[in-house]
Image (cartoon, rainbow, N blue to C red):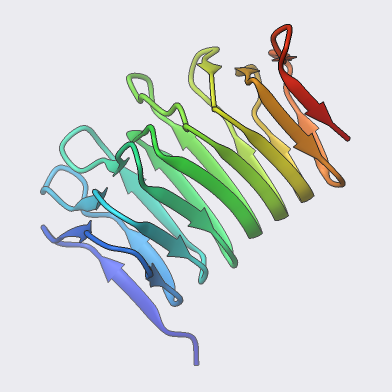
Length: 173
């Protein structure tokens, strides 16, 4: 059968080091009660899919210097999503819909597989230090993206908000 990790109580998942991840289906519905995900160090990989809802009391947060990797399954994340670490989409079908008030602004963005859609509640401006797309698809809706380094060898990127590489930036296709 399929293994499932349901966080329906008050448990907060703290990720404190490299190599942490959940290969099972991960469902977080512990809103209002203090549950949530807090990545403070290392890399956190979700590869089993799942449906998760987060709020201001129980957000999905990944700090600067950390990495969140969506690696497989069908992941649906809604609600309060805050993060300034690196964001990787390496597989699966991923839909991320941050709520109003979320501060999602990845420091680096990598797309190497899967099909991912990130829909911000209002037009946002992402300024990752680098964007790398080697496969898969990413649609960031009305969000704009400005980066000094864009490398794309395959895959598809969509943004109704636009993409900017400043004068002197690197663009490789």
